[in-house]
Length: 384
Ligand code: CAA
Image (cartoon, protein in one colour):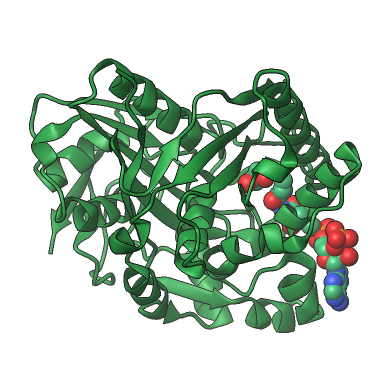
């Protein structure tokens, strides 16, 4: 018999430090409104030397799993584009830190900011076959651009952990996606570089082209119109990008689309910066936290990863979702961040440790898990 499958629960984490974009604007002699209005960003998260994608993901998943029976989890799908190893999946470290059962499949997924959506869809498909099983989907990234580059104000860090199950408490993911893949070099990070290469204008065009094409592909497959979508959620490399996409979609479809369709999804990403794979799911989290009247309403998700892959899919908010959301946890994550001065920020950015060398980190983060260092080329994590 048909079962509803989707996002049962979710939790988030971000890093220890935050930089105010007004500070960056002042030191770079840029009008602060370029960032606050032009990009739609206020601050960005930055990891301490003893934090990374694993520590943030472990914190988000740890908080999440305090509410659930981990023995139902059969897969850990870890989506990231700021991977810490070329071979070993980040989720295997997480598995150990969280004390997950051994009888679990663990794998890492990559396709720029898109792979969290691939993980979500794979999880939904797996549960369609085994409805009693659950899947832990992790999105976790550190967006780190070169100093003094165009992307610098759009850095960020964060993780969203999601439990995917049958009879979900939050969102039923509906069958039928719109998909689009095209080979384009708008943003990429070769193996020998710790920061990405970006063609800024091309990346904007590629994002708009691919998401619009994904919308068209969906229309060819499902009886659905713009009027059936109550709110749109976007990958938000900076929140203004969601406005640009909505305007492009309006033009493409010859429809008037109000910014009210996206306004409630931006509050967390304005403060976090780009969280790559996690960005769309922070948009979802903000949407659920900023509107108390979503029960039964359909949300439309625009996922995009440079390179480029886009997917448009939909989900229906479940009736009692408000009993299963924790806005105070996100507020705490954001409020607990420690503000950096400009000089501290520059030093921290330059000190970024290469993963293959031996180093020890000083204890900075108060988060439940930290990276203590690297010895014998092996990353060492500890609970605290
Ligand atoms: N007051 C208000 N607005 C101002 C302003 C002021 N004083 N000064 C400038 N602005 C506006 C500009 O008009 C512009 O807005 P519009 O695009 O709506 O016209 C906006 O601020 C940005 O100004 P610029 O275009 O001059 O900015 P820039 O050239 O310095 O760089 C960027 C912008 C290309 C997005 C750059 O930040 C970048 O390279 N970012 C990284 C790449 C990226 O995020 N691309 C997004 C799509 S790719 C993707 O989504 C995948 C991913 O996560 C990376």
